[in-house]
Image (cartoon, rainbow, N blue to C red):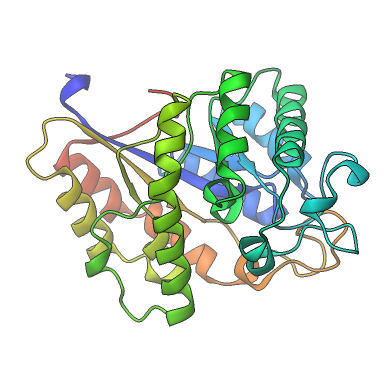
Length: 294
């Protein structure tokens, strides 16, 4: 029965960032290797992602972004979110920013939700944060309140399950960032609970980015999560796709795409996720790929 299945929500982030990245995500979905995609609204190929999602009936959620590119709302009304160049501050500076105004977070989030509603003819079932900005201390309260006000019931809580076995050769800078994300997420969970915003009770993905995604550790981690449970749901965050073009992909108003998206690591994730080995593992473990709002 469905109620006794081990359920896995596999979400491919950054839909819209690159022309070939989009096609890699579509390939993953058509091979039943992901459950859904999370779309960025302010990229050069966001419209392309919308068209592909509608064509292939891909479940899409909103990847709320205030770290890269340019706001979708009036720049003069969200000055705490941008620098002197009218662009978002970038990952590092955004996470260090202690001057975000709650009203401006809500305004930009509402603008991105409205974009999604116009393009898809519906509200997003779920909103998560690009570079996990939705759990930032100065963002999470306005984020949760806005979702509750708009009737959006689901988000992501990036607290990695059993991460102690997964720190294989990862740079210290990335580990420190992951530790910060997990610490802030545990506080954010209390706020999400207050606003009745749901999230999966289990999550992995922080320690599986790029080449760190390998068959053995991924399967071991999932098996440990579902061990001795009749029914459980876990989210796997991923970033698959084909390599982006440095000059033609990326965020609107930026000249070049970032190294993360141009890396062969994106194709490595695609190959792992679409492999026969993972499909056989899901079948043997009785794991069902889950929809966003199940």
